[in-house]
Image (tube, rainbow, N blue to C red; front, side, top):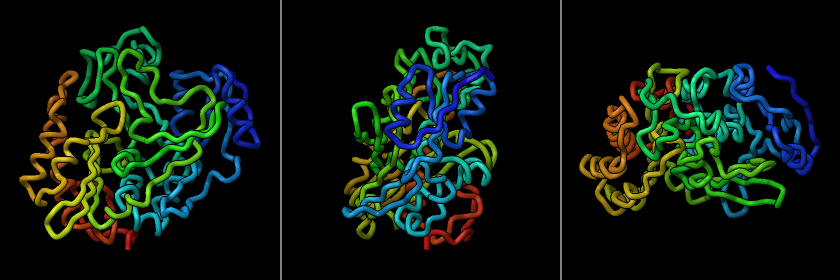
Length: 352
């Protein structure tokens, strides 16, 4: 690991100033960053430790009914917050399906949004990777592409975004609060991550020094609490990143769908909001026919980036299954294997 400067600022403004210097990176739990540094994938010149900044570790219900989650809130603390889990059960389910209990106890909300792809060619410094070394090429093209993108990929990069947490957040219209050199601004999470295009090294809309300070869920998102699920298919039932995942949320009047929210994970370099599929569900009768039509629409533009055509059909089936489970009703308990299609209910009494 290369030598680096370590700074622990006392305020958000000091942190932004320190991280605005070239070669700087923010450090919170470091569950992804430190691994990348150890492997020589990245080598910051300066680490700006934000773990002691005040006011960023709170879960707050605001006057308009929205919920504001500080960037330093731990994944486990958010998932196990009873009030939050009742209002946004699919988000809690997604958090509990990721990593291990030890990592969830350390990892932060802000860091989860910024975690890097798990593409093996990105992690292997002997492989060409445009994300790690712009202009070097993409050795994943023509390589082992089983887990790579089927939506939004380019000739420059076919990697996927690995987050579970971000998928239901995108579906529920979450907003990212950012402090930077030009002050405070807010960006919808759906627009926060960038598709690779010809600049796959530019992964988000963040400018130098920009710092995520909170994620906010609108009050309207809680109306889906009774009919929402997160579903994740992975190579191992636990402690594995998704091959494909989906978050589905329905607002029902009897068997009629008043509104729907749908997003996919691990199919693109950003959590993928299926806008057209949502539109097809609005006003439709809840059931297999509507869900199959939505799945076809959601994957209409999908194409393999190599030997991974199976992911397209898998994503269709996961959408149908997630919508079917959501329509049946959010369970009172999160299963012992959260978000697994093989899990049974009951499990941990979290939502009730």
